Length: 565
Image: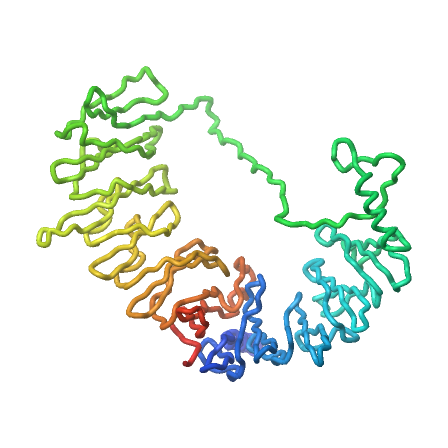
């Protein structure tokens, strides 16, 4: 028994060792040649290619790399060379690879598995089209070397051709793809002199099944004449598409090919409203709502409190004497709600005023206590808190230094007061937002700049020479926002669109950051719930470009470089 336990533990250790031994393959530049290295910078493929490019598709899978030598292409997967750069084109379709070559102006296409084994019995000129039937099946329409056409279904599970629909036909055309490839209609001619036939395949059944009914036309002209006749005669009065037609015309199974574009339309159903829970009592006491506001009454400032839904309760009106002319007072509207037990208070405005060399704020939530500063920016921001019903308003306020007489700036909240000491020489708004309406400001102390949010959180300390807004573009779950520069080193601020969080890569790189590849080499849309979901190592990979946009190499977000000039 002890031996069995030790054996299991030994196997477990082997699995752990294998997990941590996995390498990430990263394009590596040495001078003008490209190869691949691992995440530690150790060479996996000796640099010999003119270029290495990630495949251009929407899978966000960067395990596949296209090596190039002059105008020839190959294919690398997970740091392993599958096909050397000797082809005109190389690309992937549903787990198999298409190799296109050309010799003496003769084009040849081959379809091979990951192991390099051809799935075709003979070479072809090209793939006319490919259609995904379901998660494991793909329909291929081929042009053969003798210019005949064929159609087959490929099964990615068995890595083989599941069935041939047609082989070596004179002409094959797809007329219609029905219901997400559950059905396909073909127009066919087996030989040049044969009549044109229409056949419908049911792809919802396995194996694929041909529907027996078909229409035959001696010539294409006969078919198109019938097509035109049908389009003019098959209609009904109300335009529902469900009529029986007019005259003696009988509706047949000729289908109309549709050009389907745009996003599908889905029916949206409202969520069910949960029933209101009762405590069993027959009495219900509604909350009491009070409104608090400042008003001008007879050229005087008044604070008023009233019951919103009970006019019998007398209003509470209190004169407010700030010992300044009423013309020096502005009433600003905003909305704030607080609740205490069964009382709900709605605060509707606040006062901003000038008094001698000061500017002041007075809130309806505390109508007896004003706050004054040397300067107040009249533009304020409302921060919504989802933990309760209250809203927080935040202002930029300034105070003069006693020694220098220069104004230093901070943020003031009607709930929290001064958010941090007066320290910034300047605060400028940035077009960068986070949750709860938080606006970010560019802060400056001396000649150095940083970023601070209106909730008082300092995103970047003022130590940068430049924070440059970038043209917003989203790719791979990343929206680039600002480029950072410090001592001629570059960094970036971006938003992770998966988490909606703002993230910062510090300015430690010699070149500007181009693309940001999160969870390289393969970005997943959702976190896996499998036990081995975190087995594959991942990094945040950056592409680095010069000021002209030329790719100079790659780097890890922690500063590790994968190139050598």
